[in-house]
Length: 383
Image (cartoon, rainbow, N blue to C red; front, top):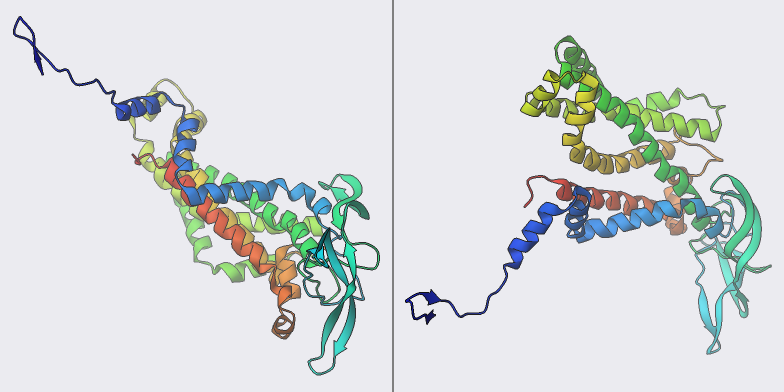
């Protein structure tokens, strides 16, 4: 502290800017999208899960290119082939990725197929090679694949099933249906849930009573038996695409009551707010009030609810297909693959046939972590 001639005091310590205040002021100037991103990045697990899900959906159109075989391509001489290891060094020299050719033998003691590798014949993998025809993104016909085995050899990264089909290829093709069914189902669920919940919460009265009784009836019914009953009603002669959309719609129709009740309860509290009353006094119609004033205040809950509902849709499709009442062959989904592997005796002898359960577990966990991170980022009460 320094004393001036006129008796005033001056603090001679160096001036330090309040960086915390600057950060808080900068946050006030940020857009909602930028602020949401900064908050979401702090949830490390949710960020990693979100990037994983983004990558998973981006590679769906490239399933045919990444897979060395088509989903229903059968290699009759390689039933229940175990996973093959990709090696890079042979006799101490680097020769690039390769596998060994294998020969099938029947183990009469355990009644299981055994495959003996020929270590004298390394088969180098081919890249950007030609294989069986497939449709890129379901639209364009193509036959170029990322990698494949040379003639006389096979490449089963995750083994083959009881019909000699590559498990690795089928999992990638199955992801196209299993991951998409959640998006289609949640779209149906959200359209019904938001519309009916908005009507019940905003208008109230007799409409509210009717919608609530429908919600209570649907929520009182056992979920799995209802799924089974509706799925069994699907005609057996319908094609895989038709069954896929029907299963998606069924899952969406049965999922909307919870969302509708949440929307209703939120609208009951928001419709008495001053900004809603002001909009009504200025002549705004009910549709505009709901669309422009009520739903934006409820958007954070809707987004978090969507990310947490998609894994439930995926598990629903998996359960129905596993029980034989969902998607059916020749369609390929993770549930259909698990249906083929439901024989416990076969899993005990050939454990790689149960590998399709791993992507289901990983994707469901990723959606839950992503939903948790998004919910925390959208929480208006978070400091």
